[in-house]
Length: 182
Image (cartoon, rainbow, N blue to C red; front, side):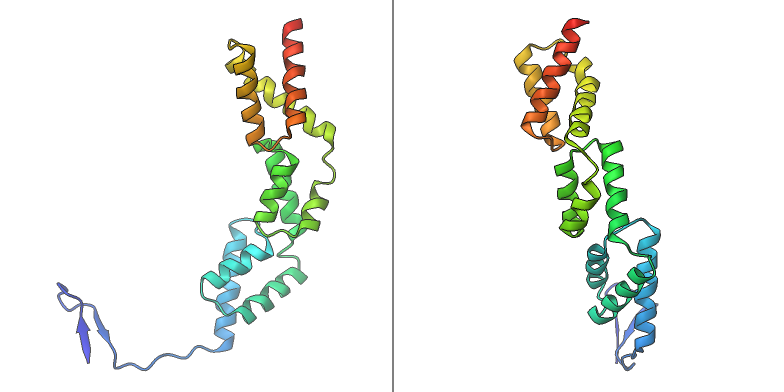
């Protein structure tokens, strides 16, 4: 029995006469391996993220778990290196705070202890210095505004980057004092 799509000239028939094709475990494993390698070629990902993506593609969980474990053993998947890459990227490009980066790492499936470890070198002084830099970069856009409006806009900007209120206040006040002196 064969069916045609409506409006089709008959070039693509769907046939139900064929029996379903069985796929071997080896072929399933190879498919998962190729998909994992393809994802890793596009960039670092956490083991949890990779596992979820493989399951979303419909790959069997036992094969996915086995291959992720094997890839982790040989160093192709490493949550600690993934976390370091994210931390460095978000600190240099995004200028995000420590707490915002930690939230992102945990959202991406990095275990909390690995996230904490990768962020351990960032001190409170580093956070303050980065917040000051961000205020200085924005200063030209807000310098003509009244003090309350300027504070509100800079505060909102830094808060969206995850900085704590105490750091935000200190950074804004510091830059205001430096600008008044100059």
